[in-house]
Length: 531
Image 1 (cartoon, helix red, strand yellow):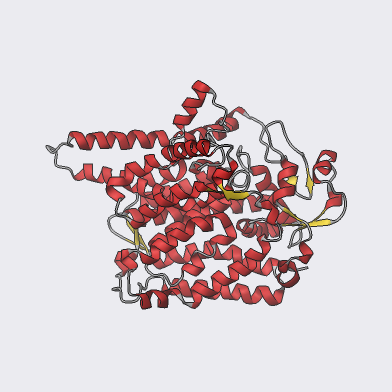
Image 2 (cartoon, helix red, strand yellow):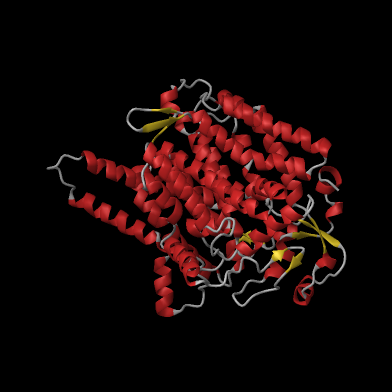
């Protein structure tokens, strides 16, 4: 990195790209070496490593027939104060999200803490013996006292920390996990700087607080107490887009990699590595893959990449596109299939409503609260942007389908599209600031411009409401010494509490989502996984 006289640092795009690919690929390589038989795992790990190296070498070469970009054009330029500020923010946010459980954490953390504990203390692959359960209430839910079961979940994100913990202990693993997550956040913020042209406080602010206009249904519920309400962001049944603070607080293992992959795809100057960079997402969030597919499709055919059909096919059908994607499907597809019951109910969302008209009212209300406001704020400036169109269309269509009883498909498949709008919203406010800085003193905004500006600012401020509520819950609970539920599960091998008075049905969730009986007969354990 070369420092400029203006107090700026130029970060080579290839360096940033290499760090991103390493962040995403290292856990997958660890999975191959730790979970697969040596004669399968070593070749697969070498394949991922080789494809990663090639993608880094090739990352600055544009699509066939497109002009070469100069290093200065491709690099990320950022002021030193922002570089330091973003690094500090990334560590703070990782800590504040509860990664490593150093602070009061949100409702999913009892499971997250147990996952890391078991990945440290158990031999890989993690297999549980039902006889080790000691809580009678837990045994009653599970219904078994003998036999064994496999731990099946998208836990790849924790593997570097777990490996570190096996050597240095649980406390060291917690610190490693927090810093690892901070690294992913920091790299994402640098990517946002590249997309938006320069660094600004809006990037970390929106990364933390972006959400929907959930304050409106919250006020309506406060006034009427209508029966469909379940939570602040679950104000209609079977459809929910959660704010970033909630996503980062509960499913950071899915959100951080998905956001990073989304930025990587937007910034890619060729399509020759999408099978690697996009395919790696399968290890972190299978549902998010559905949301990344239209983003990748948009990246392939957008104006900057547009070429003749022969050129498109030539760039797509490369070893780095085909081999990693195929391996991810074989490895993780067969691994996740060991426990197909974890998905539960699935189908078009309207089938899960008592009336089509109730579904239609809920769907329209949901789009009006969680999609329309941010789309309207960005419309004037981004209406011709292919990624904006892709994001809006995706967010309108995703709620029409349901997978799992809480509809994880809706929550996770929407992450790439929502993050695109987040990035553009951060850029919009950065641009407004820049325009005001160069605006002639005597030139004032027209009434129409002022009206649009007031609408954008007010709408955006209101959209931070759910994020602020979640942040208040974390900070307030920490300051008042509220009991943290993070140790309520303990280990999946011996679950401490069957449930708690706050609605956590621990034994049922673990048994349904993480246990896979009959694993020995699965394709994964017969042919790929260690016995």
